[in-house]
Amino acid sequence: MSSDITLYTWPTANGIKASITLEELGLPYKTEPIDIGTNIQKEEWFLKINPNGRIPALVDGSQRVFESGSIMLYLADKYDTDRKISYAPGTLEYIEQVSWLMFQIGGIGPMQGQANHFRLVAGVRSDYGIRRYIDETKRLYSVLESRLKESPYLAGSKYTIADIASYTWVRRGPALLEIDLSEFPALKQWVDEIGKRAAVQKGADVPHVDRTNEQTEQFFQSARAKIDRMANSDNH
Ligand SMILES: N[C@@H](CCC(=O)N[C@@H](CS)C(=O)NCC(=O)O)C(=O)O
Image (tube, rainbow, N blue to C red; front, side, top):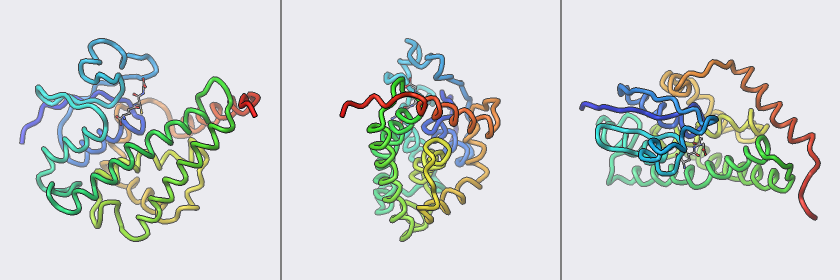
């Protein structure tokens, strides 16, 4: 099947869900780097592709697709005819796959996103905010842990887009939030295994940004240290 795909993205947890999916499917695509630090994603031309002004977004011929979850479903439904990383619509596993995908989109993404904000980015220090969102992130990880104790992958016996969606967030839990994944052994094993896939490694580097892992970790550490130096601003 032919495709004419342009992916507008940046190598963040949401961005790489789309590039990893494209790499897993072996689909050709063009990448338009959207450095979210410069706010190009709020420009008029980009809002026509994603009215929400965020990455990732994709254009395939005359079709625009925004929201990482809908991009993954679109690519799987249209191009994964061999069912390499998805289950076929109409099957029991398909609904399981969509359920775990929505669990990530509605749970881990927003909660871990807020945890990242309070722990690394906020202009004030809120111990309440940090605790609340890290605790909630860990609670969601424990839901994944329970599932992965009974099933090799989230939707069943096969690695699917549901795994990709949670993987991109969970892999960053330790470096960003100092979450110790050894508390979640099945989840840790799953993260380590998915991280070895060639398509995952390739897709996680789209677009390539010239920064080593050490520099990235150093950047996260300094951001946390900056928050730690502030006085807690919560009213008790
Ligand atoms: N629910 C959206 C969230 C997208 C999102 O929050 N993207 C972030 C990067 S991970 C972004 O574009 N941030 C820049 C901004 O908010 O302006 C999705 O899953 O695609």
